[in-house]
Amino acid sequence: MDSGDTNRFGKIGQFASGPILVVPTGQAATLAAMNSADKYGIDLTDALLLHTSQAQKATALATDDSKLAQACKQVGITPENPIDPALRRLGGHQLAGKGYPVCSTRSTGG
Image (cartoon, rainbow, N blue to C red; front, side, top):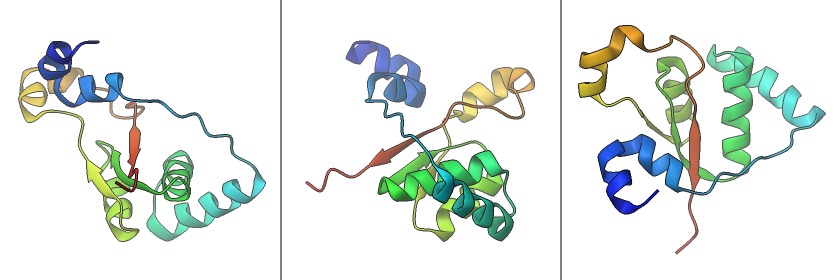
């Protein structure tokens, strides 16, 4: 994807052009996520994403889920909505209620 595509597709283009990191999870992460799910009132998969984002020192997380966005704020991660308001107006009725792809960013310390 070149810079023209990134500009044309907005935040989704930024996600597609960035690095993708697959992080394995274990029992400790799962237990921590279960606690976070209860604490913040979010789904277990969202809680695992939140926990993993914290462990990777993410500074932002893309989500369209209001509960996950609120949990992000509570742990110091900036939630970013990947769904552009114009896209929502044009085709919001076609957007799935769950299962949006999500991504997090991590500061490089620079």
